[in-house]
Image (tube, rainbow over the protein chains, first blue to last red):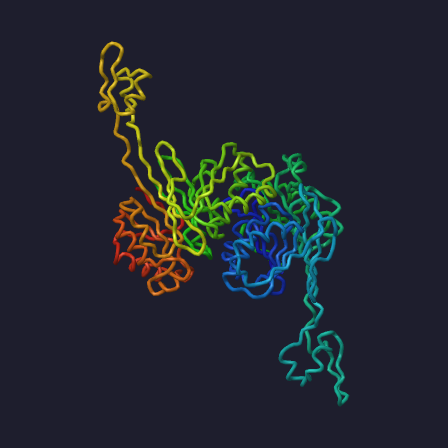
Length: 304
Length: 304
């Protein structure tokens, strides 16, 4: 997995930090998470072609997490996209977006499927053969879900030169990829361990934004490879954080520590945390609790 | 007047060129013209504080000219703006924007006045003591208006040190500013020409985007100080331009030449005009017809 931050601001964007958006690359497929204003520009800067995105996950219906969505879809239509776009979000999104799409993108070239996400349930909202996305109900001022991306590689991978060396018949391939030896018609046995590499190790990424400190998340986040957790404020502003359904950097680090995650990335910074000193101090507060913490910056990349 | 280009792309934004938006400074007051996605970011880059904007003019309801509007208004509310915002646009804008404002900006801190613009009429749509804005019906695929900004300074300006030197009474000030001498109670005459500087010369700016070649505009544009005219395509693509309700650079220059404007700025470039060579060739085509032509770039400034 490779996470690219497209926007790391909270409500008020700045020149350096656009509103919330990121793209998670899972074995070469990009998944868009939130879509603040200017997401399509940041995608260009991150060198992700918009046409490669098929699935968009929106955490909640605050403008700073979705004002870039209709513009992005509009541009896809100008590119004559044909394949469907799937959007996973609170059911209100479709009611809000449809009239705009009908007006501004009259000749939309592709179908859009809105998949309503129940903001109160921890549910599988997307699944394919190697990736599962689960909703994580959060504690914000409006219904909000984080997302847990779990990739599992179900297949052994054939080593290209072995196909010829072992004269592997077509019929054997799926058997070997499933992790079983293949017995040929002539009795010859092809051992899967000799001709394949093992499945890629499973990876898990959790996106947790926006939320007040919510220790009940810890169970779902146990041992994830990377946790992105909002850290709108510093410790001194924890009262304000609680009132506004946000977290401090220290609280994000407590979640990371208690869930024993491998790495923590903080984002969604208040415009009060604007200078390098303020950001360093926010990072220091988190690192006191959980040392392997990084700050998100627009266009920064985390591979894991 | 000072024009700052905020976005100079046509429908598909690029990293260098955001969607249409510009800010016209008239004697220190900023007027926003169109509001494509990311306008609030570009305003920051241009060092224009969003709270200083009170009037927004939207030429037409294509997304690339207004997707930045609701995000911009949302940010104004986060800044706790109190004074009203006036928006001049096709009447459909209010129908489209209100449900989003009601949903995403529930506690909007300021009133918004939508002023419907009749896209078929050349009408005064805004007027104060020194500025008049007139709509200019254009020829596009949807109802579209350009805008003509005419500033006229009705007042002479008191020279600060003269107020003391001539012992100008408060009651005399408006008389002198109106361009008349003042006779004091003791019979002493204060000659307005000695204590004031003359009114600023009138200035006119015309915004013409989006439109097919429309020679009937020439009369309204006679002698304007600066004409911004869209030039989506080059001469080779004039057929496409006509079909899509756009102009070539050459056609924009013909309008500028025939209206005897003082200076022409071209913008709204197709994503096909992306390289420096293509842009230079587009500029060359215009300059053959009207030499005093410049290309708009995001954040470029034109003073006049």
